[in-house]
Image (cartoon, rainbow, N blue to C red):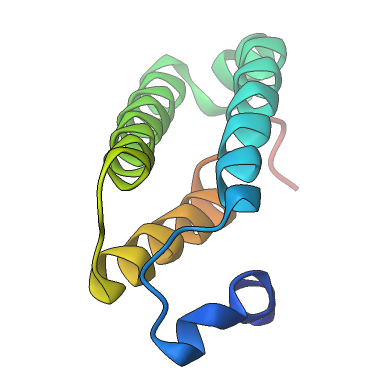
Length: 107
């Protein structure tokens, strides 16, 4: 939660523009997430099961596509404070929950 507030302190001032570092964050973590998921697929199927691994992969893909569309929309036009806030909240929620899911053996 603290990283969310530190990442975009302009949200406290009601800023409507998305900072360039957020685009870099999304691009970088998307590439890393794809690499992480492709390298962990076998372990995910082995330890978590095919169904779980596919569902997590589908949710991750959908969430990533939603974020890419949101960032593209903010890049092409003027956004509101609410849109900027939700876009960043969704980005950090994705990072916490689905960008790098645990696909290994349960403790």
